[in-house]
Image 1 (spheres, rainbow, N blue to C red):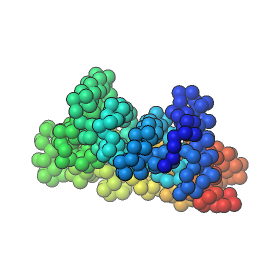
Image 2: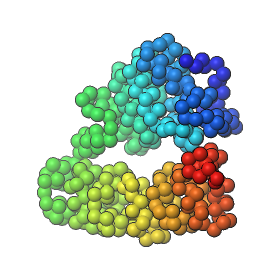
Image 3: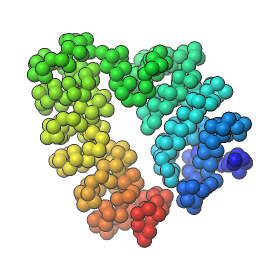
Image 4: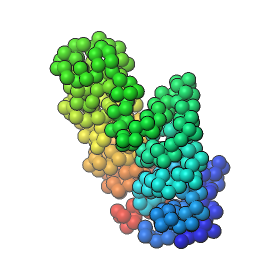
Length: 389
């Protein structure tokens, strides 16, 4: 079991001084690059792995290592981009899942106040991968303190017009009152439709779902886009898709105003030509967040200029995933016309395909984009894809 001695530098990963933080991240990446995935590497990952082992075995060392488990979560909370780009040799989200599960199982009583603060931070910020494990942790922390904090967060968010935070706080409170409910996206959608924003007009959601789509479309066709969006969000993806299919492009603004994930599910099961037409008619920022998962086919079938604007509006993590899924020649055609800083950021998340993509670009542009890649990404490409790159 690793002693924390010698690991003091890892606190620099969350330091308020950007220079201190950059030095710690650089050290973290260098140590990971110099070791194989199954070796001890002198980074925070050693301490996190030891914490997981000690927790399962109920060893006293788990208490000593607990601050480093919290540090791992704080790093993701405070600096998610640096955390994601830290050169991990495995999925950091799987580690996050395991940590939150172990904290809920073995440390909820001893570390309750500290964990409550991390949970409230997660409620207030934007959604991150595997956040549902925070809601699992909430059940282990359940009590007056946590419920009061969540109610306070919901009230403050409502007063500030922060709809997203208010809904997340109310959802966690609902989960605490509904122990048989799962904590994933299906429960979120069920809560949204049945509790948070149930459709009651012009008919209850159950009635609308049972009616022929043409009749519902005629009933809803005159609603303002924001009201139509709320009705569509209150229906399951199938009935909502059939209504939008009848309404056609007149539903574009409403779909653009829907919750992005719900809109993406609706578009995923729709006939492709209409889905592409709806996304094409939206502002690029709205379309970029509503393209269905694995939706590289949308970029392929869209007008090239529209697809380029969508890629430019995406987060680098998402844009990189789509570039990786396209044929290298298709991806290169997009990269060639993206603004260089956006292209470089996206390519870091498309790293397995980068040599093929850059090989199809003009030499000067390829060299510029390669120079924008972080050193750990170049090393990863050499280790996994092209040793001679």
